View (tube, rainbow over the protein chains, first blue to last red):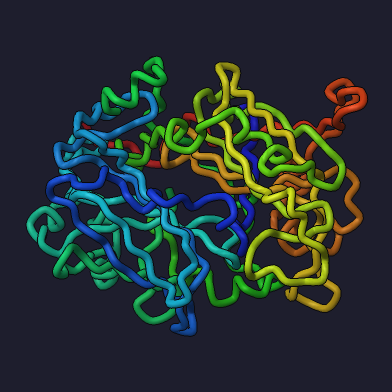
Length: 187
Length: 251
């Protein structure tokens, strides 16, 4: 490392003029087979909803390949697959909804298979840097039990990373602080 | 990428995609818990962060340029309405590098800002500064082969906020950088040299290291300034580069 990084600053309350776009919450093209919606609500340390959050996700396609900028990790051959979603429409109820497909399993650097997961960036006014978390899936118990990253998480906190199956997808709430605080990672 | 996307722009494969990114010292970024910035009080995690090793998910990243940058005018914040916006026309340009000094090409840079009076075109900003019908305040572009980006805009004004009595944010432009990997993502703010509000701004001062704070301040360039047109500010941005992880994976 020869140079030092530019520091992070908060995304602030007014990012909606620049960052969200109508198809942003869609990681896949409309009409894709196997589409799921991940619903959630973001809460602060007082249990109050965070209406001005920005959520971004990044994941593999069902074959475990990525739509990477330079073709690394794949390249994904899934028609219309972006792998990236951004939600920041500042609904007053603090909710978010992301439209995607369930990712396939990818290996860690040691070659161990990770469970299906989605990397998540959470940003907002009052957050001087992003918080990073992961979405795992409640109907992947066996894979989750083998996941090398979940194994690093204190056992009594792992359930905060498990999205629960719902009618059209899954539910994944994010608690920034307090009881049931979501596990956040040092990436 | 789908074949549909590659016909509009071909991204050359990167030979040396980093397998891991550096882990920065705590002084490099602000802490999440910073009481002088009041809204951090309820929005910072209290539990320790769990170490996330860099797997393929963390070292890959999306290709958003074709989705987000549709015309050259996306980088011209003065050309988005019928008339010219009020204020000092400036160019804001620079290069995006990693910590090895390698330029990051083809990466998306998104900016947003207040107008010359310090007013955002956002429903939550309603302090008594005028809106400019010819200024929306958002732009985006993709870095070129040398990692260079360039915007044409209006110098934003400082603006008051409710953090404490007589609180004002120094004039700033918000910058969002995707980088080439999830691990590289950065959101920051670019400031202007000599701003009188620096000593009083908790957000600027939340960065613990003085030299790190200086890296958020743009540099006026007389040689980049174009006669009868626009003053020039330059702002190079450094994202995390390759580096060893803290523990060795078993092979």
